[in-house]
Length: 443
Image 1 (cartoon, rainbow, N blue to C red):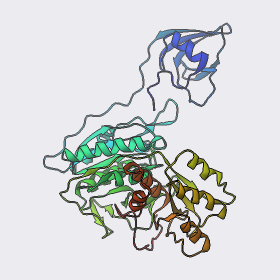
Image 2 (image 1 turned 60 degrees about the vertical axis):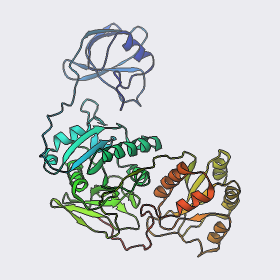
Image 3 (image 1 turned 90 degrees about the vertical axis):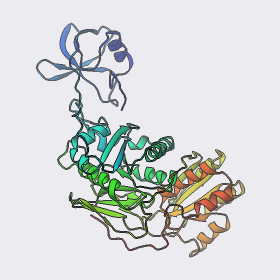
Image 4 (image 1 turned 180 degrees about the horizontal axis):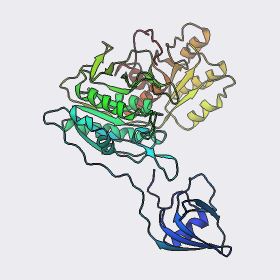
């Protein structure tokens, strides 16, 4: 992800390469143990050891040379660096809706590096536009890179920047927003945008890919095409995630950003709705609405509320859970905790003192279920009622990721316990569903 001219090299070997002025791809001569080798410097995987230099010989074979103090490295020429050349962008028809593609990275913005064999985040959203030229038939697309990071590296600072960029694009006249984003933490980011961008006039859609563009089963072009059309023409104005609905390439499912979870590691229909129906489906070049509980597209003034707090945590209860973990967060002056409890909201009674302490310290404690579907109810069993008596707040049918992100957002607005509790229990962007619908497992 970084612009490293000596990818994978560390320690004394890297120092020797730098002294010789060599970069990846350069031609060089290496003398070691009375033998001489000629070729081009190859990159290394960062997790490999720091003692072996890899060069591609003229024959085409790679060879690894163990570093030693008497190794002599001499640069003999600069080889052409491999690069992905961006095709010229097609021009959109006049009068089409304006859609802004904001790239943050992820598999949809990745390709295989055929030198190392690994997947790298190397394509900008402009590259995506160039390789899916049909986009210009449905929208006037502008595209730019905000971040180029894997989704596991994205956090609240990125969320703040994403919300600000989307807000600016909407204020500048965008009729829809697309975020390209890695799928692993996309659910967290979609929830964050749901709270940070309120009173939306148009859709904000997260688009990702489970398969890189170099694979024949890649879903990136279909997801992007459906996302741009939906962002331009859909009648709703909410934050959502749009990926494959099932194993085929026929349809894309759009699921509300606060009611979605990645439920499979690799399948193309990995994202499923949690306690809610999908908002819409893209199929055969058009959008079909599936949910009547939506915010309609409208002429409204968006609100930017992009402050988040790092003083809250999401913890998962399990058998033999050590209550000292909760005490750790309280000792570190955390202002909020979300506990993923079992079933309807049960935890071992040895956690009760920590929950009681949190109330006395003015710390919010919310309870959600580890189950994917359904809602907590702390009034059914005595252990649940004991939690309520100690100040724990049941969070109905919100799942853990959304509850955690909402708490980070609430604490970014206020640290007053009563105000935080009021915000957490207010249905701001349809994060609560008054009824738990029957959901068929899609795919």
